[in-house]
Image 1 (spheres, one colour):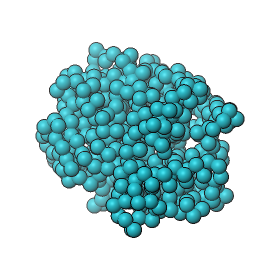
Image 2 (tube, rainbow, N blue to C red):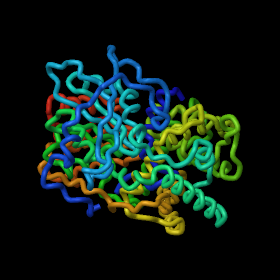
Image 3 (cartoon, one colour):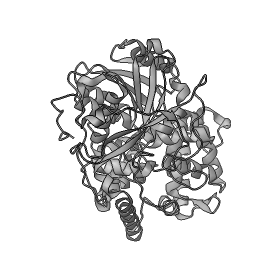
Image 4 (cartoon, rainbow, N blue to C red):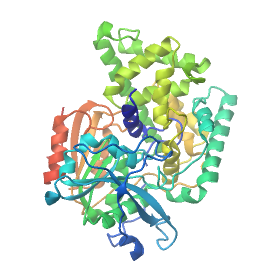
Length: 524
């Protein structure tokens, strides 16, 4: 897979958590909105001035690599740091730095303000993500400064770290769908070691990396950027973060778009089950495409059922005996399942999935392992970003529910019924926070936002990671007159970058001209 494509897919794929914590959904007992809509904090923070400078190469926690290339049409990306309280309940206390990146608006005379992006995860680096998607948002840069950031615990922003690179190689190769008591003990011991590593390396930060603190960071960011309202584009987990922001600061919401929408009303178990169904639907669509192409498809089988039986048989064989992968690393069942899931995030990656499955049948697991590495944030040089460590830390501090392996095991039947391929993995993943050293906050986030400006909520009917039903749930939870639903009948995770001119036209018209589409509009 080309490096740029792999990086884009890794950002999108952070939502699924087959290996660490449960999926990113989550309660009614979130904090009440403050009486004042502005952020608390000492004046030194709200009055701070950002020092923008050329961007350095990404840190190891951000994924490494070269500094971002020039902006489309020329010009340089600008980077800075924002000081914010470590603990928003103690705004006068210790501070941390959040890494920011900016592309100034092309037409300063018609500039609306800043448009802040969160690309999902939780755990995705916005500092590396925004340049990766730059061309997709070039129209919006006509009138906005495009801004993104590494949320607390992510990338260059006080990153959560858990294990070293070689330890992570071993961890991600483990069997996360144990077949007997011995394998269950092995998995439990590995999860305990992972959580202990997080506590050792990142302990003081772990209680404070949750979504509510990140939302308060965004309101401070709004103030420091000089914007009266927060104009926002949230994707995947970014929709949950945006919903929590709207709940806390409804009067500060400007023009906001939620794309690839997390269901704010689903708990951990319902959310994981929804993802199992979503990935199965995407796999069904992939297999149907293969059937429709006839002899052009290299996979065995002339029906969807036959192709998926081939896939389940392949995974079962890998459970017994891994095959050659990359270097001395073999492709295990866990990594193959991750690789399949990774390729389902975008229809443009289906060709890699077909090639990877075909090669694995012949004993070559390199491509599926490469896809799995992309999901886990592993670079070709063997170093890992902190995308999965941050994902686990944020999920586990957000959500109260703690499932033991035994409790996860009891629920496997329903998960297997939802997906023969992904059910076991999503079912066992319920126990991802069982060893976590920090208690969770809510059962699911409160995103009710009475008094907010309209928020455009875009759902994709073929989305594997944030199933389409989440968009309607978000519209209802935001409240009457706030959520505006736009449906895209397509494939992949997210709609704005899914190739639909209809979706782009509607979103651009809202963000650039304030034209709110009719709720219920459908794009094909």
